[in-house]
Image 1 (cartoon, rainbow, N blue to C red):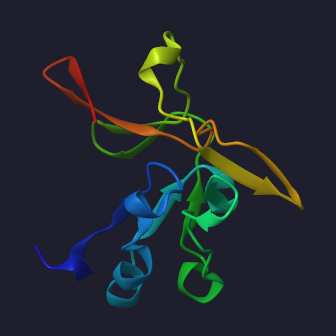
Image 2: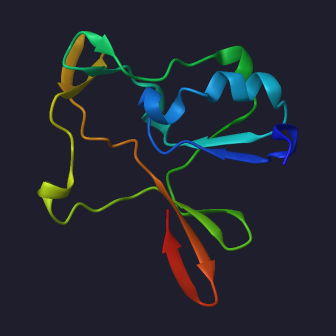
Length: 127
């Protein structure tokens, strides 16, 4: 598949290891909508020094961002799920990450996280 044929891009959360290819993608694809939670571009850090977030590029993202705050179907039987309930905190990896809001640092608890669900033969698969 040619990158120009991609219609939708879903960002799982705002750390560079999940979004580092965003700007090169947008430079090569002028049509795809970009789906994410509203706070994906809040600056994120490892500790309080090393930036590990995603920079907002207004020019490349203009008229392309779709902020998700409810279950959203982006293609037939493909859904974005914006709410993740943590049932067991041992399953998380928040330690050492922070986010900067105004001039204060707070623990980054990945509240910008979302995931995909694909429905196939009346069953779902989480991605």
